[in-house]
Image (cartoon, helix red, strand yellow):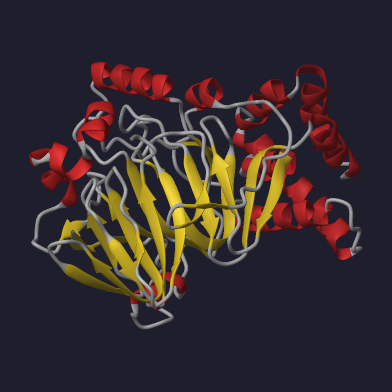
Length: 391
């Protein structure tokens, strides 16, 4: 097993305190720390303590590091990516493709010769990107579409004349009609609409009207950050989710979502396919987004952990990843898995021991453990362990 050196992504929406404090760096930092990447994604692979990037090490010895079953299923790549995500500002509204959509879209853009670094490129790789966010601090998010009847009421209550075409589209053709109608509006029309919605939403917030107050508060705030962005209006039709620390949400393919605030451990299939739908200055591929979006409406369930081997496990309906929160005491416990595992220490000091070696992880440190390695661990510490469900 090896300790890992990981990459921090400094996006403008990031926090200046959460990740620096986890890593033992000065806080507040002089720039936002948005994501800590822990894994073998080729854009920012972790580096083993021996100096080899994890993705290259896996390519050289896939059966040893991944195990034969994971190698056969996923090829010579680690199928998951772990992150620590810390948001002080909202992320863009986005969705991710299925595996079939990702492969078809990637192949089409490769055939068309669209460069990987082209800002209009939609599919960065041929893989899907389901993801799980486990809250470390209170998290707020937009997640999937709320029931259509509720959205109609939420929009109509604002009494904004500029919203009438959207309300009509939603009543007539549902979300599949309303969302494209909004995104395809001319910029000047969109700007007037968003201003009117933000003004009306602010009035209800100022009046302390409890119905939809959190939805309206966020709409007004988002309009300040993203003036004229259709995502402000789309946010009115999304479920507003609040996660307490220890709660999680799973986001399958097609789910339109945006993290608004808070921090958590995020685990996903190892992909960078993001199709944006609003709250962004980046490229929005409307045709691809509409093809990918899941327009079904209804509540998105909060995932509570179940007791599993090693700790509290967060069950998900995919094989790419499996996340467990391991609370260690001074007595050694077994953390052996048949597949590869990545371990992140967020509290205390964790002592890892295999037959050949020992490794201590302090707060903010992480390790990669090859498939099937007999492993014991003791604390006191809190570890987050990601592996796969392939056996």
